[in-house]
Length: 355
Image (cartoon, rainbow, N blue to C red; front, top):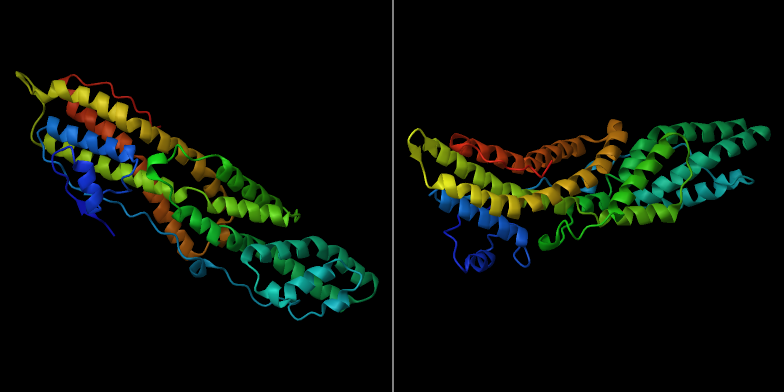
């Protein structure tokens, strides 16, 4: 879904009018970034004697609902096992919890923790049953252990990437005027810790701190993936409009040619220095830094669980990655456009602060 508006020439009441009409892309109160982008585009249009272009809002890809991507599992050989038969095994309590009504209705994160507990405790119980000559019971427990080890990546997916906390990470928004300055390192630390646990579990070390894991998931749910996309979309919308404006002016002919030097050739460098380098690029640089901090640990977990990612998740992942790449490149494309239009006039050194 896209929303369009076509700004008029700057006036004292422009921001108030846009707020009241609902045309601002990410809100009005305290949004100095929105104001800087609009001011730059307005100055650019005035300097190049070009009409203000239409600004098109980018709709960020919406992550699939948890029910659309949850992975299912066949019945286990221990689903109907009488846990009383495991007297003398610590595994008895685990199976009792797992097969209880609460266990069957447990959240995917709790289900994962129960499966990890089974993987950790089962080998000792299997050996104990064999010492007692209970080969059939031991075989059932061992078959279940192999199945659970094979299903572990899918269980981790359901509890993390496929869970509600990770979906909220991509849907949550913060005040645009404070982003990304108001962010911290807690969510990044949580993402990295979950990645470490995933590697540990997949390597065969099934130890887990139940409370600590739930706290990490809760921290992920407060993350700013959605706010990052929102900020990049805001920036990308206005800079895309600026790209179109510059392309239109270039198509009308160069600012400078033998015997010709338009007045704009002397004004434009000042506009670029003051309103793009001084006004827009600091925000672009801050978004770039946050993207390089926030996205890699998310991609790392997706890579670890790549073999089990369901089709709906993969489709959204590809769309999201393409959007991030396209939107993050918006400042660089603007720099290229500015260099193109200023090249016939001797050029102008424009720093690229967004790498």
